[in-house]
Length: 588
View 1 (cartoon, one colour):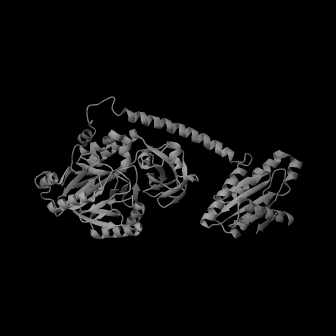
View 2 (cartoon, rainbow, N blue to C red; view 1 turned 90 degrees about the vertical axis):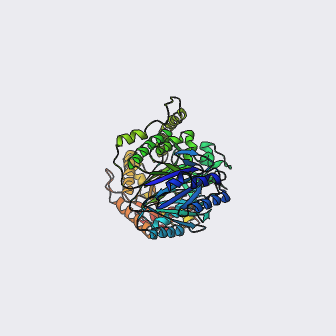
View 3 (cartoon, rainbow, N blue to C red; view 1 turned 90 degrees about the horizontal axis):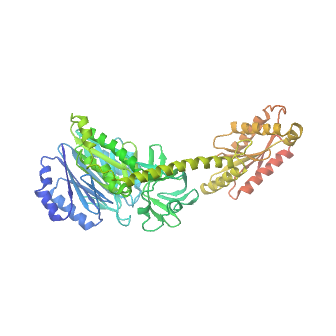
């Protein structure tokens, strides 16, 4: 059986009384392992040291860990700018702690942390992880842990900072880090852990692409300074209040493990955005906003599933964005858990969650239930009704602002979807050749410019193929433009059928076509051009019979701009025509 006591700290004298003659002194009787979590609204090292020293003196067996926060949870309720202490006593389980500083090489630190955890016991039931994501790349730390440790539920959160979003701490009984991690290892065959999470944020904006990123910094979005996203759409200034203004509007990314939120914590020089979790160059995202109705509805499912687990204590690690968004309504998702079991935790700068795949989350709530012993056989209906009881007498005017905001968001989402559909249609028409349905000249110019920039930045190569239908004017003169158009359509289809999915095929103008072939050696491009030449020569065109085409191939060179590259392909094309047509020439 697990016993938990939550203490809201006021002073050392009151804490001493709690430890000596209070509820804590009674709950510790018969315990084999003792865990004390200290979550502080202030990063005052002297105060933290005094509290941990007192607890260590009175409870010498206890594992003591903690972190600075941006909100505390005691008895399922939100507490702010205070220190809360959770005393958890286990009758049959064991607890161990690993604390490591991390001043460089987060991957290596994470791997070593994982090794130490895996060597600590053969009966690991779960791991509580605390770290400082404001000062280290916590995503790389998790990757390192994942490389040496898997199969155990890992949960927890990143230390916060109410004021400057820079000075966060994690600590154990004897160590304190502004750059590091603390892992609490729960061991025991009789210990059961139920960890779950949910988001509740919905896309609000159109889709945008991260076009330049460097580590935890996003430099450009759609080839413009990343900060412009918040300035243009939300009128958020780049000042010391940026994080507080932006935290309820995260980037929402679609990844293989579902939708993830990423919250910028600051702006850097030049309009870059700094994050505490990984964002990859090339990813697409939408600005998100919390759907309060959805959050509350999801929380009900969590309450029910947690009630069915019958935990003896519930730990919460929930993003500060949630309390900022929901304000007084935030307890609608946390307080019902207190009816199930003592509920304790803190508001974080990023949440840790996973088993085989570890993820640094933003904007989520991670709820963890712990129980010693088998699940009791209780009446589930009684449990569910107890969880869903109203917190107080119903008030028809309560929380109406959340419904208004949610409906406004639904309206904006619907309008955005309609606009995106219209923009997509207009964009497709503007970059598509009406006759052949290939990319048109404008689209080819865009792709060519982008491909050259990419090649110069990453020291890569690509090639282009320019082709012209031989004696095409004779087709129009003899058979008319309708037959001529049909020839161009069939040639376009042939080009699509014999090129790769990554190749861009377009109509350059009249009877000329251009193919942009990325990431392929020049000899392979010449072979591709030869294959296309044979394919066109083999087509039987109605009324016309057989037609041929001449090809010019050019490989990108570092000094090239679009005009120079196309000019070399064009010169090669004319060389093919001078050589008798229906052949491939390479432009140097």
